[in-house]
Image (cartoon, rainbow, N blue to C red; front, side, top):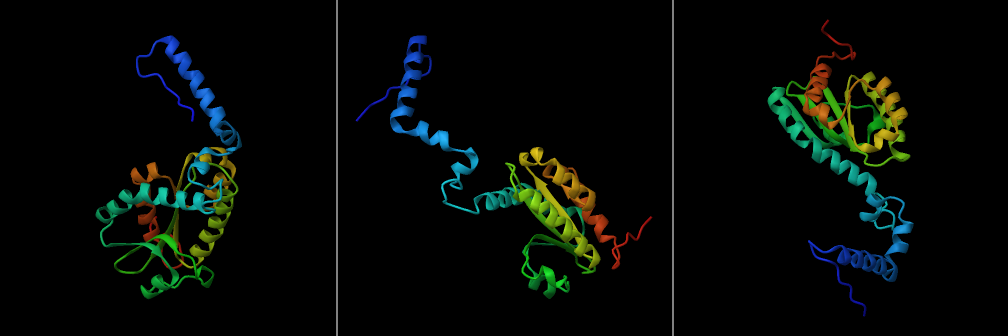
Length: 215
């Protein structure tokens, strides 16, 4: 068995040099240097995606991060919008029980968030996600949400997309196209600044044809 000794705080230059040599020797003899060479994405490796522990790790991580980040803002909406009803993980059947009939193509979809006022006249659904890295999934999601927003608007249902993450910095084209077709896209910071509340208030003011009722 080999034993390695690493220099404590305040070590001399010679001790630090020996420490660096020990680090290098440890990486080589332990095989970690070979493992590191195979890693394509450190974040995915850390949660097991690259080694097959969780094929949905990226999706679940992104969804959970987004929900957790936006949760305080969503809760504060109860004070901002009187009579607001908020449901998380709202499916087709639950919305129907509350008087909202969505197009049949949405049967089976569970919305991250659903909002309506106690008068039950207008439904707004929202999807929440976070992308820390780029990939093929976000552009596909952008196209899917564009199609969803059009179908929902035709059914007089509002749609808000809450998305964030550094991954979008290298995927600006699909995000730009989404902005051109989806009326309300906000990130966490914009939501904190009141843009989520503003989006909901605007959508609640639309009549059954989906047209704004104020000038």
